Amino acid sequence: MALQFPEGLKRQAAGLASDLKSAGFDVIISGDPCYGACDLALDTVTEGKADVLVHFGHAPVDDRPDVIFEPWIVDFDVEVLAQALPPLREKTVGLVTTVQHAHLVPAMEAFLASRGYEARVGEGTPRTPLRGQVLGCSFAAAKATGAREILFVGTGVFHPIGIALATRARVIALDPLTGTAQEVSAESLLRRRSAVIEKARAAWSFGIILSTKSGQERRALARRLATLAPGAVIITMREVSPDQILNLGFDCYVNTACPRLAYDDQVRFGRPVLSPQEFEILCGVRAWDDYTIDEIA
Ligand code: SF4
Image 1 (cartoon, rainbow, N blue to C red):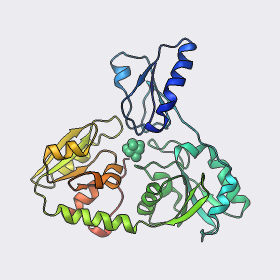
Image 2 (spheres, helix red, strand yellow):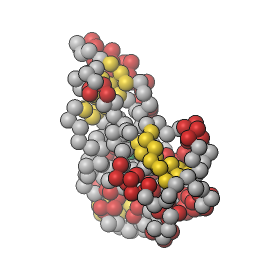
Image 3 (cartoon, rainbow, N blue to C red):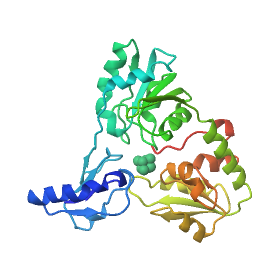
Image 4 (tube, helix red, strand yellow):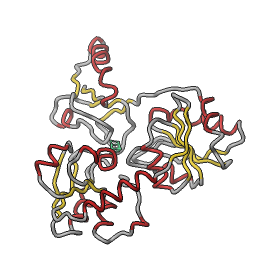
């Protein structure tokens, strides 16, 4: 069998491989960078190096019969949700979280009910199969709640900002490990993205990045975007790095790979990297008022 770990769990690889070897399995480890279930080391099974791939840390983002997904759960005491109650204005709230904490959704719902709040939880989708689960590229579970106020339980600000843009709801983010709760605003991200679009107005050549990763390849989208400007050409890439961006020499890039690349990593790239929706705004086929966060369906 082949084992694949995201960057944050790679240190577990040696111990787990050793345990599996002792249990009689023939084990290999995929050492390439991996950030999600969208980036499966499928070559291990398609090229006969292993019978099955075991991917740790994520739920599936698509249907893969030859892959076993082994989520990595992170527990916390749901009483920590008490920290998120003072900032809430509504008694009915959408409840969303990330894959590590999705097993605690029923306990979180029960806690909120015990404090007089109705939690609305979106059902799973093919890309986010766990109840209440969101990804940096899919906020379907947040949209499904239809709530005016959403409680995100997890770490970091990218997911709650994405939820705010995708739903237009008021979003409270609770870090369950520190107990910090805060209202999240998308304003600063919108200002930064508006500046990137303005910078791209001087561009003539556009590289439309088409990922070759298993769960990031959006070929139809890339093809459609390539029709929007005469200087737009599709570029296939596996890892999108600042060096590759500079070496290819395009004035501007449009990212159809992991949406977070454009939003999180712009400062690393020496050229504007637009989301598909931002490129549509640049090309005049979408209004700024219709700005939305990029998601993979
Ligand atoms: S595309 Fe990006 S946000 Fe979505 S699962 Fe992959 S790494 Fe995560």
